[in-house]
Image (cartoon, rainbow, N blue to C red; front, side, top):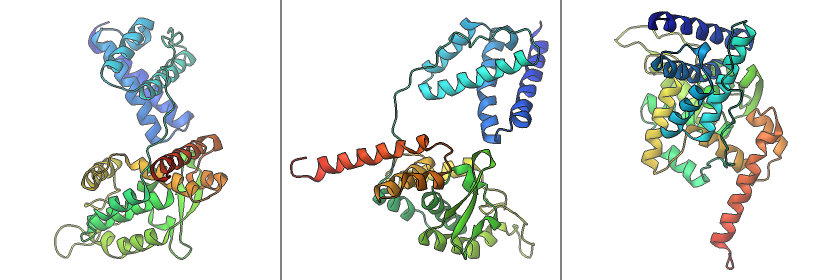
Length: 308
C-alpha cells in the first residue's frame, strides 16, 4: 500500500470512529476530541513506519507508549490514551475489519493516588484580587473565575453557560454537566455581584461591533470574547495562567473547583451535598476531597499546635 492510500484509509477509519463516539455513544465534544487526539497520534506514529492502523501489533503499541513516556507524559495521561486505543480497536472489530487488537496484552501504567491540588482561602482571594476589573475583559474574567470557584464548575460548564441559565432573583445557576445532566447550584453573594456588573457593563461592551454606530452582535452565550463569540477554553486557560503568575500561584483552572469542594467539606458541609453541587454521579469520586481536608488538618496541626 502506498503512503497516500494508507493515509486515506486510516483517515476513513478515524472519521468512522469519531462518528461512532459522537453519534452512537453520544460522548461530549470534549471527550470525543480527547479520544481522537490519542488515536491520531498513534496513526501518525504508524505512518512513519509505513503501517496502516489495522496492521498495528503489540510491539508497535509498546514502542509508541515508550516514546510518550520518554516525552514526559505522566502515567495518568498514558492510561487515558491506552483506553482510547482500546475503544478504537474494539470499534474496528465490531465493524467487521480484520484486525488484531494490539492493546489486548498491554497493561495500564501504574498510577499513584494523587490528591487534587487545592488553593487556600487566602490564595483564592489573592488570585481574584490581581484581576483588574477596570476593563470589560477584566470584569468578565473576575466574574468568570469567581463563578467557577463559587459554584465549583468545570471550565466547559462555565464557558457553555447561556444568559438564561443564571437566575439572579433566585441566586442560582442552572448547569449542564457531563452526560447532559442538569443541576441547580447556588450562587454566592460575591459571585452574584460580579456577575451582575459583568452583565450590566462588560458584556454589552464586548458584544458591540468595532466601529461607531454598529449594532451589537447577538449571542446566547453568557461569557463572550472580544468579538462577541463564545469564550473559548483556550482563552480561559491562557488568562488563568497569567493571573496565577501575577498572584504567585501554580495550578490550573480546575484547582478552583477542587478548592470549592475542599473548603465546603472543611466548613462542615455534608458529603452528599457536595456530590450534588459538583455533579458527580458516584459519591466515591467526591470522597477524595475528604482526604484533602484531612491532609489540610494534619498540616495545620503540624504548623500551629505547640506539640505539632
